[in-house]
Image 1 (tube, rainbow, N blue to C red):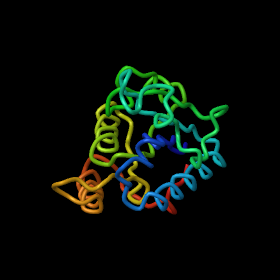
Image 2 (spheres, rainbow, N blue to C red):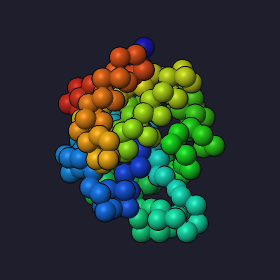
Image 3 (cartoon, rainbow, N blue to C red):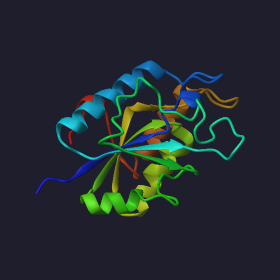
Image 4 (cartoon, rainbow, N blue to C red):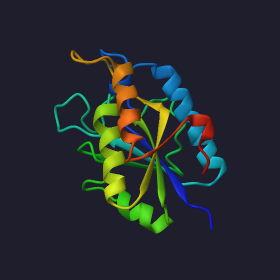
Length: 176
């Protein structure tokens, strides 16, 4: 019996993507995520979309323009499960784990933003919960930091997470 996979898209939101700091290779990453959405949808694989939600008064408070998903993200809220998260983990205080169990998901394809926070956290938490993470090396991104450039952060996390926490692959190799 084939392994059941689902797609988890993290924090592809207006305020994070089009904020004062631009994500490294943002348009390429967005195109790769949209390609993965199409692949998952064609295979009838579940698609889960986590939207980071800040407290009232924050730049990404619920309902604000920056909090919205990117209009160019090819998510269909009628079929895909869009949900709010309040911490880096999409599993903390959300129904994600239950949804994965109900769908019989064994592997979770992880993409989105930001590499060193939510992408890293969700790969590690998924593994701890018994769901094998698949990190798509060319479908996650972040911004430069004072200590390290975004390209180096992405490369470091691909190497680190791909060395024991997640299966590493590229967009074109992902199958659902």
